[in-house]
Length: 84
Image (cartoon, rainbow, N blue to C red; front, side, top):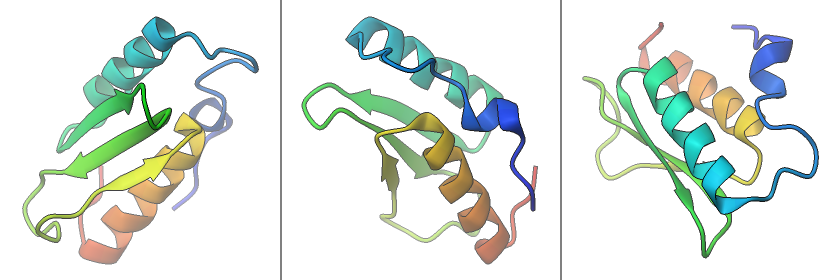
């Protein structure tokens, strides 16, 4: 499953503003049904919780870069049988 360049570059370089990061997390969640996505201001990571049928219980993915989080989400979806 390939990841588009747009998915890799969701946040411009240097965008460390917490409000902007929270908006990015909300955008990611809207674009990825079956996931709850938040931005942790303490950890400074984007965190995704899979909520789709077949997802492993009590699991989550995290990354400091939203593009990397998208890649991990796609890998998890492929591994556990859920595709967009």
